[in-house]
Structure formats: C-alpha cells, structure tokens
Image (cartoon, rainbow, N blue to C red; front, side):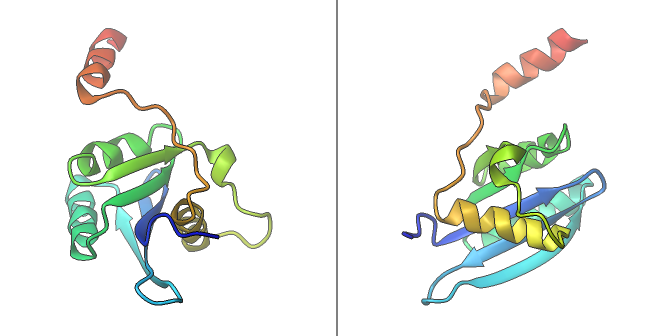
Length: 133
C-alpha cells in the first residue's frame, strides 16, 4: 500500500493518560517512537513539543468520549488532526493494550485508511459550549 503520511502520529486517548506513537518512515522500514503522557495541560504541551521535535504535523486520534477535546484544543494550532470514529480504528481482537492501539491507529492513518470526523471550527465550538450552559 502507498504511504500517504511519511511522518505521522497515532494517539490512544484515555481519561487519565494518552499514548502517542510517532511513526517516521525515512527508510523502507518505519520507526516507532512511543511515549505515554498525562492528560494535564503541561503534559499535553510536552506532547506538542515532542511532535514538533519529530516534525510531525499529521496526527490521528480516536474520539473516546469527551477525552479527546483537550488534546485537540492544544494540538490544533500546530498539527493537522484527524479525529477518527472508534469503529474505523478498532484493532483486531486479541491481546490489546494502549501501546498497540496507538501504533495501530498510526499505521492505519499512515496508509490513508482512516476517514476523519467533522469537527467545527473553534468559534463554533465555543458557541456550542456557551449554549450548553
């Protein structure tokens, strides 16, 4: 299959932490750089800095509940983010863990197999938050 994104990142988001796998394919075989981050803002800024360190501007993450929203808000200025429906990035049943899930999301995204969900722009998202209160 043709590689669409030579350098990209797959993120598996949970309530208290997230696992990011940056995939770089400078050579024939891709290299995986995995790291776990907290969901606090200072840790999300470290994730953003790590993505910039690898010149990674394309990110895919699973839309797990509402936990993807803070990650999206911090990364949207510096990255092209694809928020994927969990149905489209579900891994094959078996021995699953967070590192394997983030790697799987990154691999699917790297090959262009993940359709993105519609996310409105920032001003509309802010307006929606106000109307919900």
